[in-house]
Image (cartoon, rainbow, N blue to C red; front, side):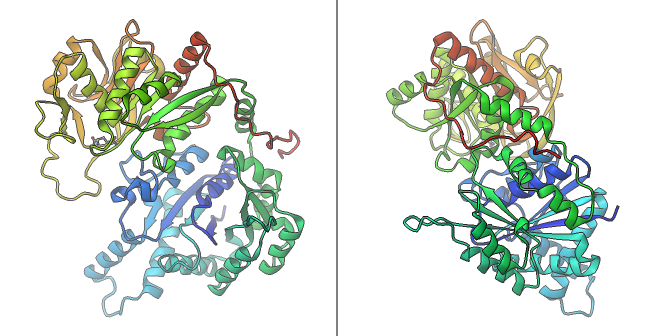
Length: 555
Ligand code: GLN
């Protein structure tokens, strides 16, 4: 079939969820087509690996070790695919490649210009990525909002792409925002009209508009937007606020997006969302609720831990429970213990640097001593080892050299060979690595396998010099690297603790709605058991009463 491109631009505000909206459209199309996403960012960093998660959200890591924007998490989770490094384009990467071409003499005799050289380069990149991946449909998400200087070249490139291969093969979707200002209390279409005008000035006529709004759009507002954009009303879709992003494909579907896509792209569209709907309804109808606490430095911004939050929610439908997440960061031990006494499970997630570390270590101690289900991720594993070394192995002064390079017992230390690295970007142990799993361990029963590959992003490791004492004192290394040198998974024996597990990897990155990450599944299951045995279920269930799935809506 002739390859099709769907381009998503944004207007009015950034952060409206272009990635989730495009991934939702991809989900609908992926039942019948090979769908490949390309995310274009305007910044000059080569990738988000060197950016603070508080500023840019979580750094997502692919199998091949590339550090990419967190939107790739949505693409992987919605499309059930493993993304590749070439699917992420940043202006930093574009300029690197252009400069390299220029130095090689590829433009000999020419004045190298933003238009046409850079814009053509981007356009060709889209086409080549479609060819290399053999995609039926390429999704192109342009970051930021139309009118941002740093995105102009991407916009020029997609306009040229449509000129080259025909408008019928490139579908432009524009995501905007319809506010309901306080006091005015009505939906306002003007910001959308203005951002559509900006897009049109650049030679692009959007063919579908998705308007993000806290309510379904009124007919009147739809009409206004449709008129100003020269579209029909059914081409205006509401991206209504939801408590669970997995509902979005279904919400779009109810508004007829499949028929719209079929008509605009001139291809048959028959989705298969049955299992997806089933899982959402199971979660919606769950009658019990538990609380999982996350200890973290970036508590102010949930986006920093987006995949962890997702991985927790993926378990809900499979275990018939709702999970409330509580962020805990406090140095007051009494307060912490009081808060932890009320939760059913605890996650200490990944992190960097020394802020809040002692608080996390004492949370781990509390979990270990009070048999609270515990999952340590990356830094969480390292700090669990520090805690065990100090309080069980009596190595007082044990630490990670990341926090205290001169500490008496460096139980967590640099990965061999990385000491001399001066560049920051891409120098960690990144990407997927296999681990051999210990027979009879809890980790083996969770994964139901004796070889497991998860994605990594870290510099430090459990120091082999201390393996012996940790093992002697009862820590179980339930997964190690194939050469036996690196501790990838650890746990406490069942007789000692009902659920105390940690991994040097980031299993949250591969978790999906249909197949939750095993260590998260195990945590939620153990937390349910704790709630059952103590009779401490949450009292007030958070229920979204506004959502129903009409069983006739699937086509
Ligand atoms: N800071 C630790 C390291 O570099 C852990 C990293 C992480 O949690 N992602 O090894």
